[in-house]
Figure 1: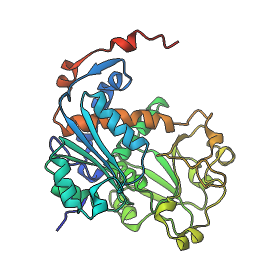
Figure 2: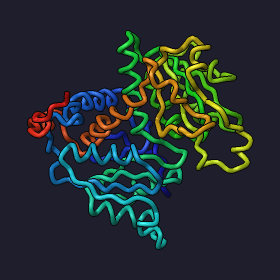
Figure 3: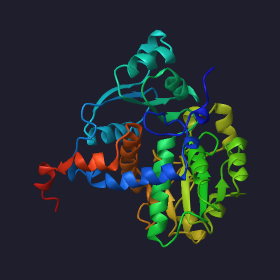
Figure 4: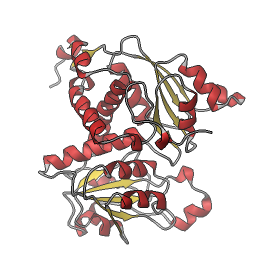
Length: 348
């Protein structure tokens, strides 16, 4: 019988990362410290070869741009090599091969695997058959642990820049809370802090699953259900907006949700007195008219942090690989040298 992600042991060298429930405060500190360490490597100002000779198996069976390129760039920045496949059409699964067989075969070619799959729990199946560590890059409406890590890292840094801490923060989460796996992982991970207040708003039929609500409440945090996005952001330190996961919804659910217009825009923030709030979004942001998502008219507000998230994603995923591959900070420093091509460029 396949184990659920939370039944796997704590994340560490040679181990899978499938759920944020495998993380604790000590691991968070380790990952965040490594993310700070690799900052110049991520920026390309220095070169690192700590993963020289290592191979990443990148298996994305669901559309992805940021997550796939972020993981692959992270591995390459650390000196490793990448083998990749995208979609079912170009994999042996199109011929009826099982997850077990695919995982066992590809893990034999790799030193670590990153897997995204449209079905909840499927990445845990990959992990069961793999002979190398597996990193969950998203499994249906299940979890997205690396996104939650970069979200928490970004939120922590943004609050600190404003003289605040993550402990005791009020976080508004608006949009699709039912199918948004990034919401599920982030809320679970935020329970490692203390005294978090969540202000939630979602359209009808897209409410937060009860299991996530119970998980948060059982750990002593507060959830406030709000009637609008404006109500949710009022008094909050940060807002996390999510697009409607239309690809996971039936036509009946979509009709019930009645999602049209703007989920969150400048006027809503202005009316709530929250124009200086930290604004986050896991991306992609649906820029089409009437998409019920975060409007582009907030892009010049001082708290916009969505591109800080994507930049931090590279650093966090580099840190994840270092932990999974058992590389210490000292090993990273020893394998790092100046990048001559970057230093020669005139960035002005």
